[in-house]
Length: 91
View 1 (spheres, rainbow, N blue to C red):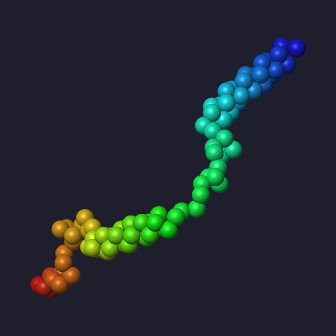
View 2 (cartoon, rainbow, N blue to C red):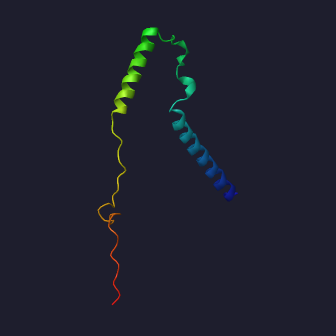
């Protein structure tokens, strides 16, 4: 009898904990609660032209950025490829 009470008590505690955790997750919102974007009218020709101008300005600005060379943190430690390692002379 005592063992069944302990098991039932643990099950109730687990259920309460699960209910509390799922409530916090549900408070973050569901996609169903957000308004849908279907009521938005299609863009006008002026808006389309403005967006195209912004896109072309962005592309031209990003094309002016030079390519970044890969960083080599061991460049100062590693011997350069042009100088061969010194060979040991037999004595």
